[in-house]
Image (cartoon, rainbow, N blue to C red):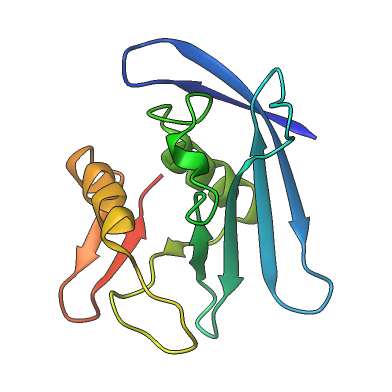
Length: 139
């Protein structure tokens, strides 16, 4: 397990444990970010990336939509998504893109995800293509 070091939005340094695994049945990489110390329920901030035919990695899941993990104080307002994307980019050496706002196979970008991408675009860490409705991470 690796470490992910982040400066949160109020300037406090935070360190998290991070685990990256490759799905044995598909070209999907799963990332789990754990607070230090770990939560009693051992829950984590998740992200999954899927390899696309053009060689990019598309985010197919990020954050805790079901459990509300992104609202827990251990993970809220810490800058985890951008740090996690930078980590994944460095580890896998591939461009990382968003899903469009509507898409097939039940994968699309939510309003919260769009807000995340817009925050990264404002800091120069993402670009947006209006034609495809896709953001691209810029490390």
